Amino acid sequence: MIISDLSNNCIDCDSVNGENKIKCEKDSTEEEKCSSKCGIVNGKNYGSCPSGQCCSKDGICGTDPKYCSVALGCQKKLGKCIEGRCGSEWGSCPSDQCCSKKGFCGTNSNFCSPSGGCQAKYGKCIESKCGKGIGKCPEGQCCSKKGYCGTTVEFCSPLKGCQSEFGTCSTGRCGELYGSYPEGQCCSKKGYCGTTSGYCSIGNKCQPKYGKCIEGRCGANWEFCSALQGCQSEFGTCSTGRCGELYGSYPEGQCCSKKGYCGTTSGYCSIGNKCQPKYGKCVEGRCGANWGKCPSGQCCSEKGYCGTSSSFCSTSKGCQSKYGICK
Image (cartoon, rainbow, N blue to C red; front, top):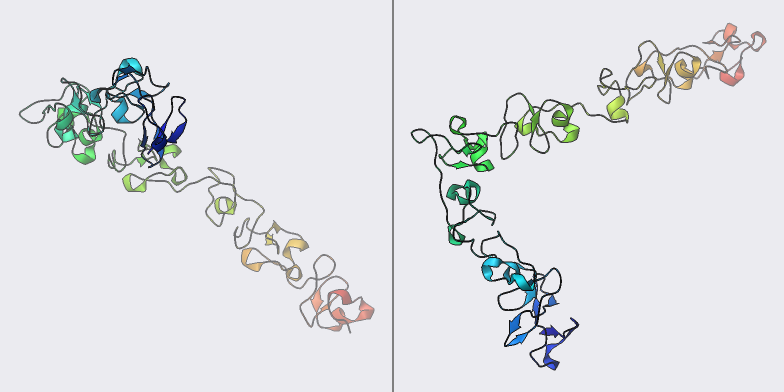
């Protein structure tokens, strides 16, 4: 076991004796940690704990519930203490308080209702009932399916059977705990109902299981901007002047170049320049500096047309050998 001297320097306890040494214990990570003594232990006064630590009933400093819980005897004058907690680690609440499911002390139905998880072992528990033949819950509280009053999800969620005629029920909430309420609205990432993009956008993690969601997402790449992919120009910018496998055939009546741009000149429309006929019109039978080469076996005439007759292929008539065969 390791302990420390009064300067909080940990040392091997096997080599140390004496009441003025500081006890060490293992923390939750199973690592040795130093713990100063505090208060009066065996007739000796060790004073207060270091700043931020609690002094336990047994005069040991630390920060865990066993040191800091008032219910377990934390000494307020010798360090900080934590009040209002309860449960297996923290102990019991004061005699007139209830211990909630999450280990907090209080006196309203959130703490005291057994159906809401009140821990009877660590405080009192009280049910406030409601429903047919009993009446309504106090103002601001919800009446659960089983007829108990409270303000947590268990009481207030329509999905869990909250009875609106006997108390308040959650409105405007949705999701795993609250269900799909109200009908026709979208359920946001954080479980609130609404109809704007903050609630309805898939991109904002709208929850389709608990309401409608709108697919419209905003972005800047082709997946968002391509007309072929369904870009909605009335709600944002859509790609203009692009075409091809990713962008589609936009705009109508133009040619789609090899690199996926729209236009009407030879650079876009020439088959020789690999115009894409699937995504726009293409012009066949042209050749030359602007149009490119003729198909294999054809001649490019002086005026830039492809053919196989002497009008196209005769060198004397201006056949362009750079863009086709000449005879």
